[in-house]
Length: 96
Image (cartoon, rainbow, N blue to C red):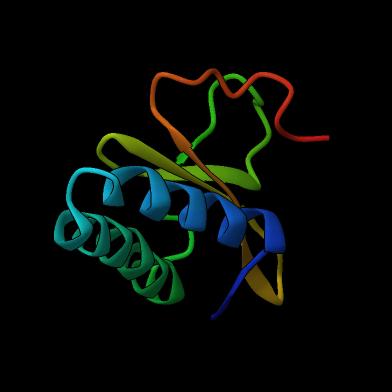
């Protein structure tokens, strides 16, 4: 299945990279690389993540790449990565 990263998700990745780069540019690239690798997982196994508990909709799922949550929507045509947020951030109100 095709995986699409929304503009918001790409902005989140850029912010993560920028924040971590302040102390370790190499580690920043590693973290973002691991998050992007989760997209490859979702291509093969789109429902491998759990349903996001605070949203409660089966098509809204997440995989964890500690300490980040990769939140995505599964449709019949594609997987749409919508947010990449720190695990401490509550997801309530993230999804319409």
